[in-house]
Length: 124
Image (cartoon, rainbow, N blue to C red):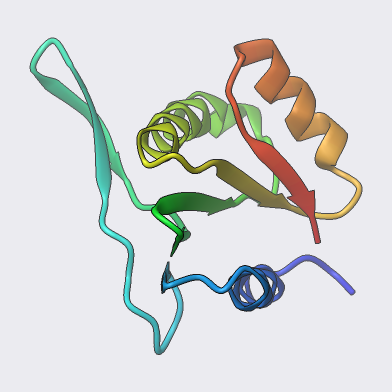
């Protein structure tokens, strides 16, 4: 089965059930939408990014980002987004989870390790 946002949302919903989450916000129909987060430095916004999901449980929040590929054209924007979500997750005592196509986990892990971004990569 090919990678799709629907498959990623199903994975997030299943994870929410298995961890007994108390709140789940997903960028999907019939769900509350997560708030946007902005990177600011020197008084300027770098951009506003919305996580694909935020799962809250036991005083923690995990941030989820669904990523299909690592195209050179938008890799710097993705790095900013991952750094932001990783920092926000740490503040909330949670973690950043990247949901990627099965078989591409090593590619994403290499980029995360190279940039020292704290995140878990899950292939679906």
